[in-house]
Amino acid sequence: MTKNKLNKIPELGLIVNTYLLAIIAFFIFRLLLFFTEMDRIDDTVSFVNILKAFGMGIRFDIVITGYIMFFPSLFLLIQYIVNKRFELLHRIAFYWILVLFSIAFIISAADIPYFNQFFSRFSIGAFEWISNFDFVVKMIVEEPKYIIAVVPFAVVYYLFYRMLKVIFKKYNQSVSNQPKSTIFFGFRILITLLLLVFIFIGVRGRVQKKSPIRIGTAYFCEDPFLNQLGLNPVFTFMRSYLDSLDPDNESISLMDNEDAVKNVRKYYHITNTEYASPIARKIIPDSISANKPNVIVV
Image (cartoon, rainbow, N blue to C red; front, side, top):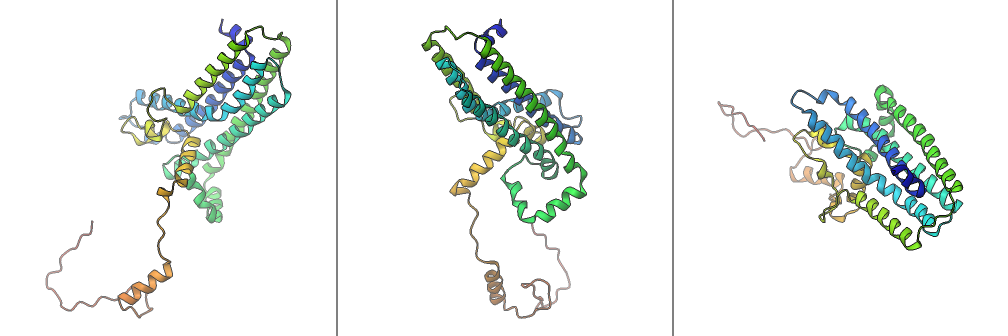
């Protein structure tokens, strides 16, 4: 019954199948991350919470998939509304999906060694290492597991590309073999609007009126690893980038380091240069105490 309905609306079948394909791909990366961090799972972690983390992950994966699929879905549904196929829109939809999901998979693959190293999902902070490119290359060469991260990306990308071609091929065959739709024009518009509303709800991550899904939504238990496992690295990367554009989150502009050192040396009357630190100085007490108390700085 469902298959017959999808055949009557080929665009719907293409959108649903692409959604499922993308979510499976994201699930594979999350599963790989889980296995690389298995040492964090002990007897105190319940199996139910592990399932909840993966379930939460599907929600975040739907959000990212919705962002990527919105415009291709719109292009395809325009064809459905006017009851005519446009080759240009078809090609744009295919390459839009392929390119943007490829970028998403690159981020997902890079997220695995990034999380292993910093215990944090991928963010714009990863690009702070670009200035130390030599160090990054050395770290990758000396740690084989970072090179292995390329393998899952290559496999997932290849399978995704092949399956996406199959999905679009079936769509083309369905459109070519199917006579023009006799469904009322207004009803086709209604179906299109309903589909776009469902995609929009998926992008929000929730149906409630409150704010869209946030990083904090993934924190459902006391285990820090499971709380982060449900996040999608593309989501955390986008969120960190948007936060970096907020003027309230700008770094504090401090004075120049050399000026600061000169001022400290001036205020403390430091003239010697025998120490490695430019602000180090020898402390000579004015009295000697028989009892030497311990000083603890917290």
